[in-house]
Image (cartoon, rainbow, N blue to C red):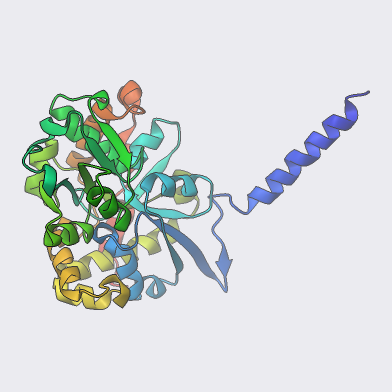
Length: 350
């Protein structure tokens, strides 16, 4: 009898928690005036590798598909996936490899549009250290910048070093974020080398503060560095959301396929002019250069190539602490689907 009150209090607390978090159920997509309200977290809105997200909004592709979409910026893909898992957002524009990493943790995420077959990442080395760091084999004893631990840049850094025969104990991974924090880390001896994207790459190379060590903005460089394709920028969602709302997922796929086609048929100058003016900042020519240097990474069709997915699993199976112990039970087919993109190609342009 004496436990009845504490039990009742606990039950009430649990019930209140369920009610409070019910609105964040990832399977439930808010509606307003009959239009889905979608929040997409992007692993760096200003990064060229994720340009299709803001470009889709600028082109009116979401509105044309009867969607109200809010884009949120987050510099780390690892943080973005957390927001997705907690139901704070309905989708993420980030790297495909997170779907495999999360499956290893018994979470189901699925890429529904694949933007790129290569990472679009560059390993930069500080000009001061460029003579001593000529290949990933020279990473021993060095401080290497990554967006955050557990991010895609972290996976790729371990892969580059691992294929050179190094383990994580041979070097130090340092969280430096992206953009100005990455630049500050390299310019103030916080890191000796690091992985980042355009427009940061263009800024540091133009200033003379860094040199390119490994370039994965194109297929040739990616195959040389990683032994094959490495599908990266994508739109991914929780599997139960995809299953519960296929009609909304289709509308998102329609919007992004339209955007990828547009990229494929327009110049870097035209793309830069369509993006928000603040993205170019005080140096529009540098922004155009950053787009030109990276734009070849986008595949133009939104489809996942099975060869690429297999290579991502191979690399994570060797270098990811989460995936390596369970790589043989990863269900790769559950990590992506081409069905919505294929349907988008059949439908009239939206």
